[in-house]
Length: 234
Image (cartoon, rainbow, N blue to C red; front, side, top):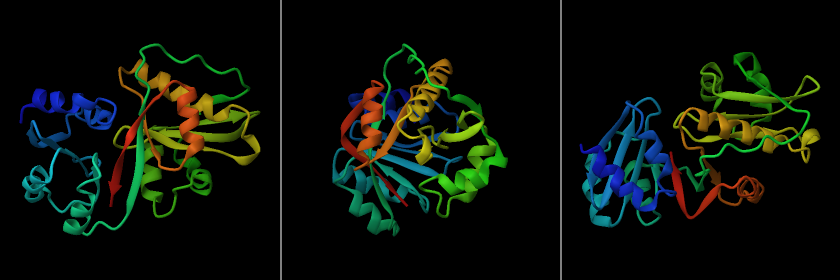
């Protein structure tokens, strides 16, 4: 399908759709439906569908295109219940989309933290401290093996970590309690933002609704935050 038409639709609300725009840059993303009323894309590597639609009729036209979806990311609330019922997706996670839209790298905070890549030997540590580790061991291991996770070390102690999710969002940010309020989270976020920029990518993250601490951190780092929410269904 016409990629330029899909990008044109998504660019009407660039911030809300930044995850779709970024994943469309990958060769393993397929455009399944694209009109001026909506977009449906699928990434095989992540096994994730992403949808944006203006009306119920557009969603109805898309339903037969889905192929046994296990994960769907919605960008409007009006059809969430329809997709849940149609595909028996019980888990729902509501998020705010946030992105660093500037071209200038962030200044590195002055702390004693040193950033180092993490590998699979760090799996027990990450599983112990990652808030969403439940039933996610294979996923976390895959992120570690792919070189997508980094740790902040203070005096050779691992104080916290951050990573890039399979679909391209920044996340998995955790700081151990004894190292909080020392700027470790900001150092990790800054490192990953600047890494994204050096690779020609737009840094973006999806913050679970109600996580005020994470929202404040991203706003402090000059991220833009959409008022609308997206939803992960699985």
